[in-house]
Image 1 (cartoon, rainbow, N blue to C red):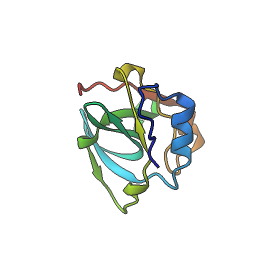
Image 2 (cartoon, rainbow, N blue to C red):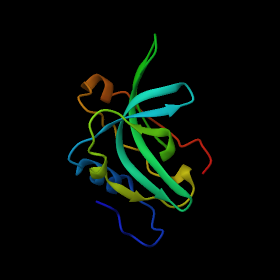
Image 3 (cartoon, rainbow, N blue to C red):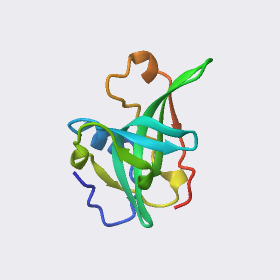
Image 4 (tube, rainbow, N blue to C red):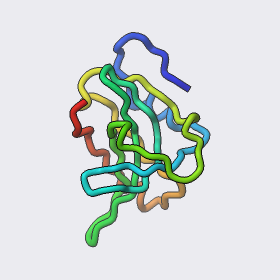
Length: 128
């Protein structure tokens, strides 16, 4: 499933959620963040004028808090983990400045409700 819009109409939050929710399953990946490798769910691929990005979600726990974190990362920071299904991951077109991209919804395979209730979306920080 690929968003085939050719104009630069911004992708809305509702459109992004619908595309992700229509995917048959969320494959697991390893994403390389500033802190090192993290197991994550691959929610969506995003195509920007200057390259590909991945929308991912992961569980982050510290001694005093926990959260389901979603963020956009450069696609080259994502590596397959476990079984495939990566071809079924939806693709969307992203336009404009990364600060204007929609937040990713709180989705993670088998995440308990208490994790979903503490969702935090972190903005895309890396330059394209």
